[in-house]
Picture 1: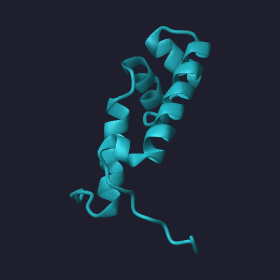
Picture 2 (picture 1 turned 180 degrees about the horizontal axis):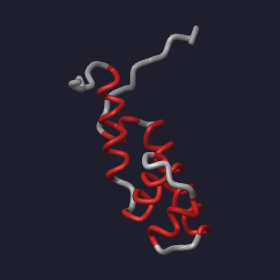
Picture 3 (picture 1 turned 90 degrees about the vertical axis):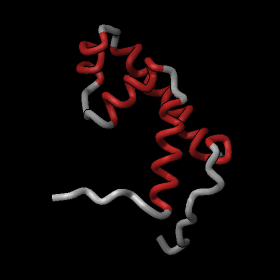
Picture 4 (picture 1 turned 30 degrees about the vertical axis):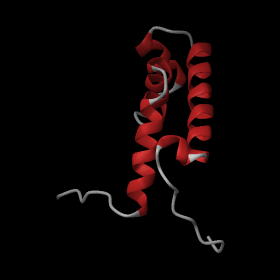
Length: 89
């Protein structure tokens, strides 16, 4: 089964997310991706990266905060605008 490339408004969101992720410090990006994409628990991330669970929590928190700010202002990422959602959603 072939995977179709992302096009349209979703493509700009995907591109903005990729840019925002690439701008995170390596340690924050690693912890965030291990938790959010790979689905590892904080304990598993700590064991994988040889850091404490407190450090994992801190890195993921900082990554989320940075991503939230970056994605709330897409012009900082070089994206003109995200598609607007209908108010009925």
